[in-house]
Length: 251
Image 1 (tube, rainbow, N blue to C red):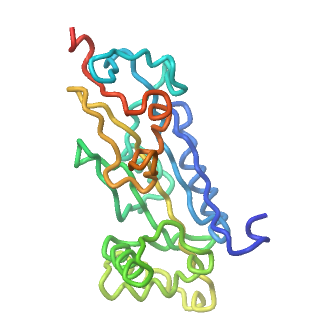
Image 2: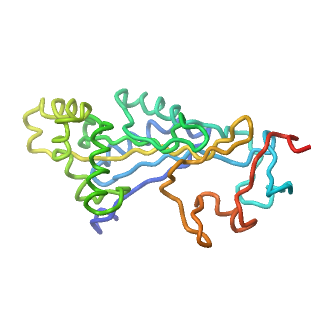
Image 3: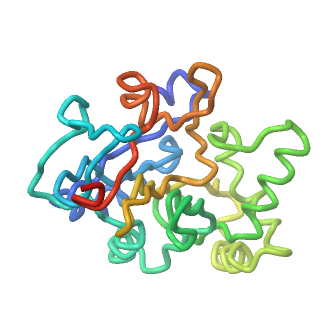
């Protein structure tokens, strides 16, 4: 329906639970089959309040997190990591390679927003955007439009062959160029770009710190302040984000 309407970016978001991780390779394959009309595939790793590991506070007051909608005592993992999803996708696409990421505010070596950009036809994936390529795209978009690129227009995702020109300085795109044009008939075929994003929400460190997405693209304004949109329930209920401390730390 979006494709028929035209000029609308199509993104599918999927929350990833422990028992649904096994479907990720097939979902990534499905997105490939519709690479001409599905522009973004997003996997959001499941998180919930962990009442067993930490206690929650507003100032010196301990908070009953049962008052919030995302409080659950669940028998499933709430610590799935982005690299695990990469390895799952590689069972279907061995060459799958991310090109950019946002790190954690408390764990700079964690991958909070992990982006891969693949180029292909409905039949084959020929390669991936490299780190220099995505850096160039963001830099020039910012220079030209004073903002960074989040969702590309469908008319731009159809210009995969034009993106291959960045292979002059991007090794990954250079490999893609030679792989695509190994078949001379591909000069007559359209090459599509498709984003695959893996989002790893808040992680609680052993000492109780909350590692959020550093430079979060989904940040929002609430009462004149920038706040994480994924934690608006705390703002609505308490006016602040709750603090976490190891169990019984405050006793």
